[in-house]
Length: 149
Image (cartoon, rainbow, N blue to C red; front, side, top):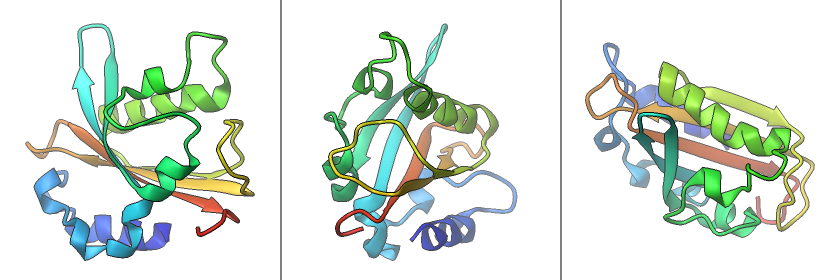
């Protein structure tokens, strides 16, 4: 599943810039849509925040909290003794937004999802309307061993 996503993202990546949201055609990968999340990058003076704009059905079913039209840092309570997995939710996207480089993860997480699975795998990919400044992060999530994954 993630291989298909990364293959597609590489195919739409222009040689001289980052891909824009307009380069991404969701209908080109319909079998992946339930696993995707699109966040808008909002850069402030003191911090960068990530607003969930679109989340696929599988991600919404797995998430322990509501996601749509919420900031990621408020979806997980990072102000009450932040767990490493919860802090990673924000920091990994910040790395993508700051560097324009895709980030991949495979392994165990400590977040209480709504269903059980063995491992989680995800990739966060940058999108930039101007080709340079990341303004969205498009992510694909796969829950190994989850029902209907």
